[in-house]
Length: 146
Image: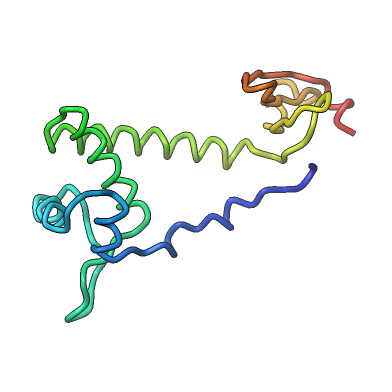
């Protein structure tokens, strides 16, 4: 399980959905989607004359989030703000993982995520381990990594 995972292979910019597809996938009417776009809560991709609206994968996720918070009783404006907060947090998490992730491995027969060495202790490595559904952090000497 010592393969390297390349995040560049997860390019979500290639996932594009027409307004009808987006509506079906999110259970938000095309009318609502147009309204949300008109109010600035979502954006469609630039379109050519005669083309229907198209949405990126990220916008589709935003639509799902807005719908979720609307169903929870939030106003459209509040739902949109919540989605922006969640999106910012997800972006931070993505940056952290992209910068710290080194490889997938195993420790004591359990799947482990190698997060590399702390700057102040280059002789140690930090691992995230999933032990029967429980996330654990383990610090081990780099020498054991060989």
